[in-house]
Length: 503
Image: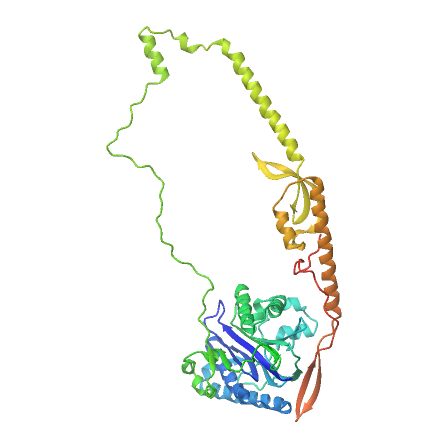
């Protein structure tokens, strides 16, 4: 069995940043993401410098025993490079960068991590975060002072405790991990988890087969989530070259600031070693930020309502009113005034009868219509909960033609999508039909609740990855161990993705 990587990388400036300070490298033996810090003080210079320091590790495979030493030496070289840039140009003294990298030898990867970029592992349908953020809020979580769900809104959520900056001598975490066939790894800058939930990341990694489509989907999710920062993602699948239907990726790829044209002219970037273009590397530059949709002008005539008047026409002569005719006739002796002022009394019985018949018909029709309406039932939403209504979902002269017949504690958000769509149609029928529909909804809701409860229990008892530390060639090396566990309980496909309880 021969292990190899099939990978893809993508970087985007996001919606709020003016430029891309992220840098990334993906190659057959090395995956690395660096998130520059400093804004106008050249964060993009720091991230690109670090990527260019570690990129030569990808030139040739090395034995597992040398992985930790090699990546540690590359980080030391990156520190020296950053220190030289800061000494040459003090105006960039506040710049810095994170680094999350994986150096591969067969099925073993050395993980190097400092800062708040992240590495995830998707294995057997479960998502593991295999790096720990070096942030102030993560330290608070570790100490039990805040809950994990409070981290996203904490005012100090962006404060890093460790980074590569050319001024301090902070060391990265170094560990070894043994991959399995079918594993999928995600390396990303913090712009992804800031805008996209772990559940969305898991769904994208699990549902999309092609790594190139996965990184695109993740970027789109981040854009949809507001993308307040640059977003960079590398997705890599562990494949068996002898059995996989897909060929491994062999071309090295640069992305983000490290790949931007003309970056060497930015501030002191000329001090960064530029020796990784020898192998015909593919560059993916970051766009200045474009929307996925736009507006286009539409040609067409604009219609204005109005009446066209013929300038040669004259208004018609007004006919004399009956009152004027009556007055004129009286003056000329052709008719008596009381001929027009007294209606015939013999017409009243006929008019009264017609009016009475009209009232009876309308009133009878209303009564019959009301009884017909009251004989209809439908299942709908009452205050966000499923309910049976009597009547039809309509109004006449502002009067509702329905009333609540029976309420439940089943939230509409907790029922299957197909049932919710049918419910919103308010299809009327007999009471028996409405009750049968409600019975089906109740059965599906109970099934989904039980399935989600089983998953929650499974997650609560799932063993966490643990680390075993030992020294290799004088370096403390931590190996990440992921315990085996029983399969995750299935959730029916018709169930909502999140459990919802009634109130």
